[in-house]
Image 1 (cartoon, helix red, strand yellow):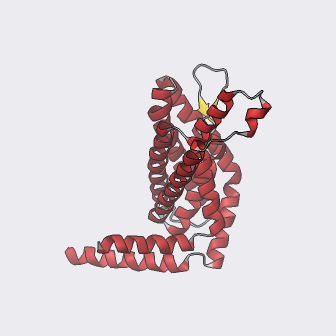
Image 2 (image 1 turned 90 degrees about the vertical axis):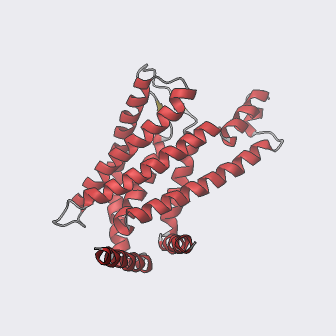
Image 3 (image 1 turned 45 degrees about the vertical axis):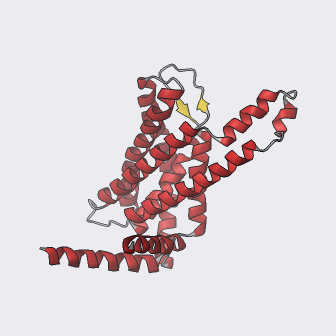
Length: 258
């Protein structure tokens, strides 16, 4: 019980330390990924399949990379889990709204076809397997991305806070994390429920990773500027001090056990 209280105290301190605009953008991208995953991109190529979640998923990964560098992988993962919790709450609200009798605007645009209303209610109300698949995929890929980003950063002994170090750890961890996210979702959802082949799942994961990497490469300088500004303004100094103290205590306990 004491450990749970300590964890929730840490989480509250962390969430109050993350700039609100960053958390809002991160949360919005996670929610949009979940909603856009319902739509497949029709590219007229048999071996290639993608969903529209790739339009915004790079935003979530860039936010995680910035938070990992500034706060650490544990903190970035805690924020990711909090975002997933908010996303599930938003999905519940949309589901309840889909049960309320009413008419969508598109119902009138397409000749009052009842199927339009049902389709929109189904899309915004969510499908359990899409929600489950996207939740499992994102949590798994967040852990992979955050800790691989941290591990890669350890390899940079010279100028670890420079742009090239940031870019390398961001690109490599995002490639690993995005591939894992796309692959897990493709096999959990698209393979079983949308009829994708194993080849389509793998190519979706690979091509989605490449597409998202290209976009993140364009915006990584912006991420680095944000990170630099956080350092200059001392963003999250209370949490960073708490984390440093906790790490010091853990090291003391480890030495004591020896």
